[in-house]
Image (cartoon, rainbow, N blue to C red; front, side):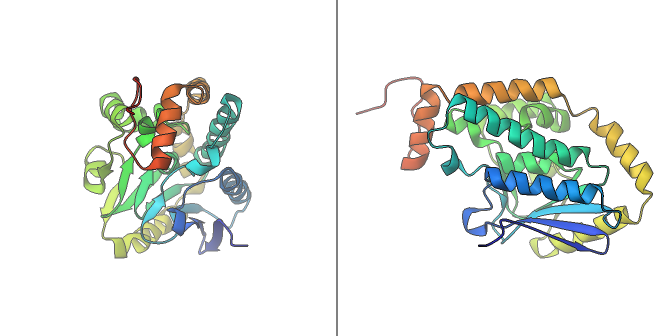
Length: 260
């Protein structure tokens, strides 16, 4: 059976790769658990001084939650899924070592939230970012309602979440969502270069800088409120319509009877 999360350690850097390229590296609950296991092992491994997270293939970093996994989910199941994602992504933010997202294509929904949980983000020119959950009658469930406004500002975050608009790498750089944009063929080398610089830096000072900066981003109350709302939306007619439209590859019709 193929591993959906691959990790390897080279020259003080732990590479973590989401390995479902045929599914645009869509994230399953088991993948969340595997990512968290890797992060926990890295935390106690003195040979690892920096972490890079990326996606397999050329099309996607991650297209987000594997939506096929939530068919028939109850409110409580959706609530637990949101909390599961929060736990995994919080472990990345709490890791006292630098983390870098190497975004090699689509970073949508939970994939964008995974990138947001990393300390730094380098994207290829073909990368695309967005929180398109609104098109399903949902909201982001893995931290974007808290992290995105703190990173790019309230006004921009409100627009991206409420419209579900997908933006390209240049716009993401311009609004401060990512740190660098590089040609696709140079993405991994550029990311490795930055990771090597950090890996050779003063580990304790870097950990303290990360802790203090991330203390401005994390808010447990906000994350729990997000989880409660995410779960509650699974009980709405709008979600049922949005989910059906997604499966049927049509435009959803919200808030009014569907046409015959």
